[in-house]
Image (cartoon, helix red, strand yellow):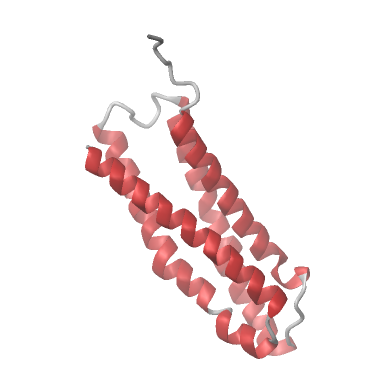
Length: 154
């Protein structure tokens, strides 16, 4: 099962790294680009989510299901494992409704009313990306520290 653990680390690293990169790309889009530049770069953000983040996230979740059903960790045996599943399901609205959905709405508004680089235009999107990064960091910390797991001394 070591190969499964290595695969998990690789997938989570891609998921986290891509989300951080998308966050920086969003900041650049909303605060440093003209309307024409935004309309070229902005649509790339949902593409990155659809081509990189979503497939990796689905593979990570599937791998978690396989890992939980075929190892001693299970799904409900340890509180830290349950916490990771809860956080995983909290990520879904942040990605789908929060980031991708909001960005399509912003692109429609920009196409019709114009672009003004402001927190109002990208605030919800940046908030959802920040939530994703925060949740992923907590999940990584929980995976490393395994709080509540009994440790043997000696």
